[in-house]
Figure (cartoon, rainbow, N blue to C red):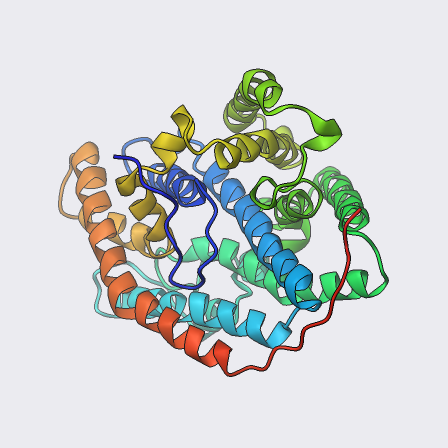
Length: 373
């Protein structure tokens, strides 16, 4: 039975279908890291969806705050992000260290590797040293490092741009220009024989996936009642742009050419995500919305962060028990969901309530600001 959008434990504002999109993204990543189809499944596209979604959602919340209060509170923002992300992440890092220390998983863990994950520079650690030294089955935390760098810098950038009396559309154009520069930078690095990790995990080569979501949130945000670009009707988006976008996204995901994947594949995918996001957010009662807002799918989306953090460790543990790859993946998925639910109930949910209490103590100054067109 379809359900409305889940209300986050970290805030009352909710957008239809986003938890469902999280569920799809994390399941795509899970299959990519599973043992049934190693190397043949484009699990990396799940990360692209996460990046786009994070940029869109965070900027939507920041825009709402600015339009209602006339300012963006960095203290509240960093408080929300720290309490939301760090405790589950540190728990996963600790679990990896423990499983390696007691011999359940093969490990080359060093203090430098643990420090890289704890301080959120796993992505550049991979560029310099590769995965050696990291706690076992935790190298995917490179993507968390990219997001944390975005969270650290982007709100301050937005404050500076709004302080210059720029409209949200002009700010969006600036972000789109930055996205174009990121594509050019990736291409230059590729032509300079940069390493896979340099191109794939670095913040300076992946930030455009977040910024394009942020630009959408500022320029044409379906959750905030904006018009589509050039006032294209929802019907045209649904019948013309969405099918084209789905095909383009799928082709970009499966084309094996390394030169394409490490330079412009992400660009094709996040551009394709724009009409897809518009459609599923704007029409939650449509066929796609009914799937994405199904109670079970929404629950997977709510648990997606912890699923992402723990899934590789759990897969690696069960892979040592059974020889049947489908059985390993099936049992690992069930076990991962159970672990994620446990982390949600014991860590994420209580800390979400604590965060709201702490945030309420931070005074809010309200000023009327106009960042409309």
